Image (cartoon, rainbow, N blue to C red; front, top):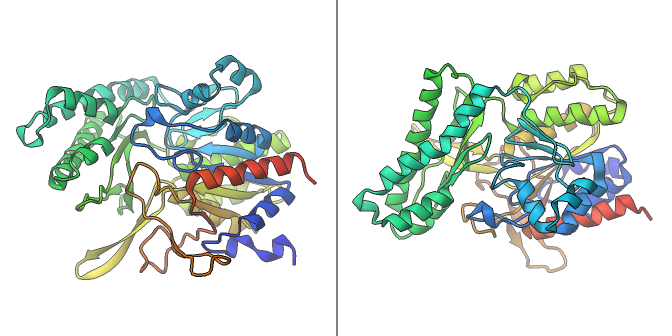
Amino acid sequence: MTVKDASLSSRSLSLDHQSLAQMLIERKNMLIIQDLDGVCMGLVKDPLTRVMEARYLEAVKALEEHFFVLTNGEHIGQRGVNGIIERTWNDSSSIKEQGLYLPGLAGGGVQWQDCYANVFHPGVSDAEMAFLAAIPNKVANQLREIGQQAKYGLNQLQLAKCIKSTVLDNTISPTANLNVFHEIFSDRPELYAELQQSMKAITDSLLQEARQQGLADSFFVHLAPNLGRDDQGVEIMQPAQGSDSGTTDFQFMLRGAIKEVGVVVILNHYYYLQTGEYPLGKNFHAREAPHKQSDLLKLVKDNFAAEIMPTIVGAGDTVTSKAVENNGRIEFKRGGSDRGFLELVQALGKEFDTDNVVVYVDSSGGEVKNRQALKLDRSDPKAVRVIQGPGDSGDTEDPLTLNFVFPGGHLEYVDFFCQLAKARKFPQ
């Protein structure tokens, strides 16, 4: 039986990493699209403390045009991934010369970077950039006003430290990350829940301000984790409940900066590297693409040659499914910042018969304790198996299949990734 016949895309929650590696080694026309936080580095409460292994960066370089990142974080800025890379090597000039920066899309799909750290923001206006630049101070000021209320019990020094860790001054995706507040109020969850609601109100008011400035169609707020999207396409906040922090990240983003669109942007570039031509044109960018999966599939089917279509591996760590009661009925809200792009990777595999694979990395062991760990059956040490994924156990109709999983988190995944890159570069 060949690897193709084995149809790795039909696997579910598999731990057979060897079969996955063998397929990726043998298949020349292969493309990995990968998230970052929680996948190739641990989840931490303070993004400034993130670290990345040098061997991972070398492995990325070895894969060349067969690998691109797709993250809601950013390449540049104080908390950008480029800074992590430069701290890893402690020699930024050498990194640039060797092309060891991570190529691909950040900011959800609107910040493009090549391996030499040349960064572009296609389709973004000066007015939009100016509005985004003002957001961190506005959020910090409002959080300061809220946090000074006596019920929170924070002195000025504590509050200032919390705000510094919470407000992330990203260039194109300014973010409020409430993890530090969740930790402080761990014994008073009702206060954290109130603060979460206040944060939602702050972002809503900023969207209203954008509309008043003629930027009504420019922005949206990405919530992580979330409960999917409502009928208008707006992400649904996951309310805090007891020790469950629910939504912790409120990320102000440019309209069109959604990961599933980023998959098509990356594919457009991949085809150029293979053929010298862009199927959707050199200047195609995320902000001019449709958002619905069906429309994205049609766009690819109508413009991309099937014989060039690679086997795509989508790797992420944020996929949720939660049962909620609605008028006496139980329904499942499916979300997670990686879900959309992983579902599109899966759908493209079916459309083009390329046996695409979805990889899930269990990041529940990080500092951010809002992830559900994979459940393993270890009764037979020689045949350990996964008996429950990261979603609700009752959600048996989730359209997303997690083909291969890494319960050991980013450390296990990085080991796999480095071995794969070495094997492709130096085949036996």
